Length: 89
Image (cartoon, rainbow, N blue to C red; front, top):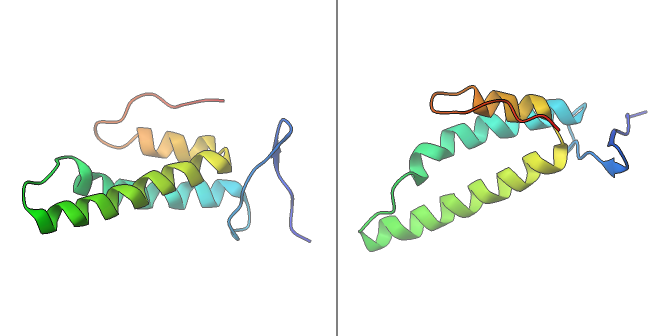
């Protein structure tokens, strides 16, 4: 039987992983690989299309990370170079 995890009254999404913390950590890793691709808006038309696609995926990953309510995922992302403090709910 899989565990059902809540933050207060909100269901934490586990996205098919054993628990939401694992999902949050993996999503944070994926986000860290996409951030360098979305730091500057390109001038080339083809590069802009790629930028918009990658940026859309990154925004979707941020949404999924938020829905896991994973403090570990947020802390991992913020511990990367250029990151800030750990976000605690």
